[in-house]
Length: 419
Image (cartoon, rainbow, N blue to C red; front, side):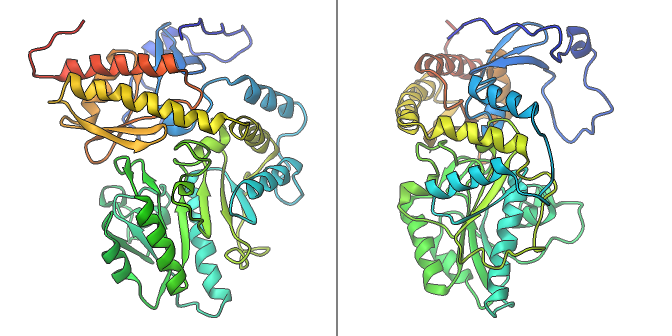
């Protein structure tokens, strides 16, 4: 659990304590409320700062570092590919891209894969694919997409409009059209929103940014039935929930259904920028030469890492191990609730995408955890996300909960003391 981190060599990039101590650089656009903390290296579930302090990383780069930091198989794949070929563009075939696409098709519902660089791009491509489907099938008026309040689909103008969060849309002019928002967990409102211009229903099986809110298996099956009954496409945003995060390869598998289109990113790259949208042959029939593109998407470096991620995640027993770790973590998190019920209300989520519903501002809890050298991620709806690497050990899961207990006690008004 506390094995020493590998020392950086003289040739590896690193930030000095002096550079970190000078404070945030004004050269970086201040679009994030960043912690004043700089990390020099990471290994497994641990990060080490430029001042030598060790942090247990249960943020995982916001569910990106699915296999932790510096996973040896990913490092080897990237280093090997970097000495061969970095980029050619999609004007030519890319061998690693074709292999990764074939493996994703073999492991999912999909027949076709388009590679990009991020979750926002993947969601944008999924939206275009759904609209194009109806266009080529003689119904160009069907272009509107129903989405769920509290969703987060990315930061492009279209994906911001799909999410519908007024805070993120403010100041960017007219909102991109074509999206109808319905309340979370309201099947009747979802059905009522369907009209002659509706092309698809788009949702996350579990809202991460929206507060770790799980769409029930029953409701997911209901969405599938609605889409089938009305000739709509079902789009799933599995950017945060995919690649083993919930204890299945993709979260929709819990409900026993399949979408028509699915956006993925984060975990598939294991820390390297990689996204994709997957679709059935029928749903993607309109995506022909010239309809969509990406200069960097699916380049040799990214797909080498993506293939290495699948080597690990699809190995026998790996995803089943995530389920076991989820049980351990959920049981341990109950201690956090018991320790400070005036701070923590309950536990949400699935697999290793869990959340603590709080009675205090999430930012306060994140700060208290940081004081315990534990990294967590805030979310909406009074929730903080707990996102360990899928490779975290049982001991690390327990250690993280010990630190969360101490963080909760820092904020508690009950008559308790830290031990």
